[in-house]
Length: 100
Image (cartoon, rainbow, N blue to C red; front, side, top):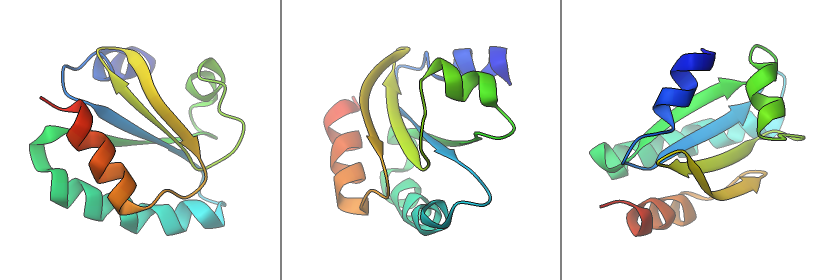
């Protein structure tokens, strides 16, 4: 995943990364919100999930201390990050402002 992740976040399109864990209650609340966001934004952005327990190197690299943590990348740069459950409207607006 390491090399692949580095390539994914270099995209011209925004890439929203959901750092999560299977044991995390708030992560379970975030998951359906992200599905709705993905359905609404379509091809404007890519949404990927990173399990922090299975990908500790990536989580450490981006100093993910709590889950869920959402980080929006564009061309490899972090352009937004938030820890905790994030509402659909905020995420859709964020992607709309950073796409295109």
